[in-house]
Length: 337
Image (cartoon, rainbow, N blue to C red; front, side, top):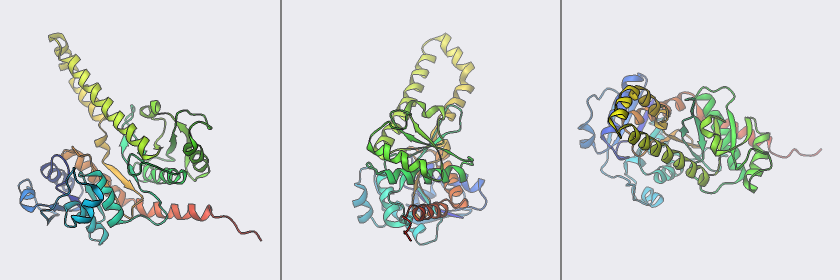
């Protein structure tokens, strides 16, 4: 199995990207990685070349670049060349911690959508209090959505959760302002009807306040709402840990307590760190494309590689393609005799 990685994307590239790749190679013996980027910079951190190749390029898409324009103009950018490896069949998946919008454009223009998928979804797995996590889609690939898009999100999320996360009959919930069936706007009401008829384990509407309690394994919403929820959860977690740190370092007594609690606090932080689950998958493309967090360290990048490897191994894209085809066929009106 071969995975292409944009070695120049992210706040800590290429060092953390290279270290994460080395860790993955040491863990997965069937894996071959192509690091795409400035060869001189990459080699500064490359301690082993066992099953690691370098595809050299000096061109990089910056976080400040306009996504679509950058993808079209910077044809030799590390992110673009990593995606081309997938499109040309020399890699099975690609990963980048770079410009999110550019990666979505790259996935659409170069890797391509699965036939029948109207809108791909950007989908991270977020932590829950019990440690099981839940998949949230979409978180920004599409600001607007139609009911049919939310149906496809539910199907794709269910397949991923079952195949990669090993959840039998994943519970799919529709994010809404209340749990009652008739709650919400036109989008959620119509999406509810479609999801209820789909070949998935739909558990109805779920509220944002219940997400971290593990009310569903898969939560679907439009990209605007999903992005707001994602950043609210992320911001709240960061703020809570800051307040906790201040409370535990404010006096000698609290510092003594912090020393005793440190192992438990480290475990809690790890539990609530969504980078432990991997990156955000861009579901609905012909091959796995993973968006790692922009501030990814080596461990976060390693988890994104693990995620991409599992998606390839479990044939997630092919399964989504078949399920969407079957759904499209079953939704066609029958001809009257």
